[in-house]
Length: 245
Image: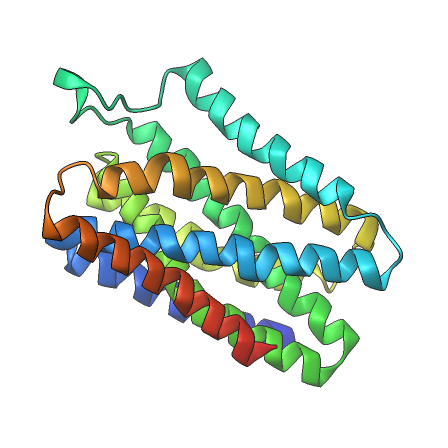
């Protein structure tokens, strides 16, 4: 039940991040630049190390996680192309947006948030100390998950009401994830590829959607500021994972 308590704190953290993005919507390009760095940091400093840690601890080959990462990346890319959702970057289509793309992206983040909750629950199955450290890390970066969710919805021309709906789904996902671990114990052989698949999702969202949008109308010194924010987002997650570790 301790895992459920900490997962409720992630709900508050995620919702607070989403409200922050709504309040400062007029500075969305700056938020998106930071968001791209955060997602890159989550993949590089959180999910991938966890894949290798799980693989090493249980004598598994990390190859399955890397294959799943590529599969997740290509699946989301193919989904965009198949449904013709990917917003064009050329000429008269520069301002074209697809609300459904925002929904798919936000659902991918909700899937990651669900795994955050699963991570909290499984960590507490290992021990109270491990669970506490993992929970603090999740609470810290779930603020950014809420920010990411709202940003992705708004940049793809979804309404504020839809953005709030997806924010609630994302905020509730860790609670559901933690609660689910009361019912089962997921074997590491299944968790490794699952984490890899969502790493591919997040990597695609960061590199192919958020970064191009963040820089789409920037020039001169503003580009340097946006790049600096991306680096700051990655550094923030690096710091969180180092403190938690």
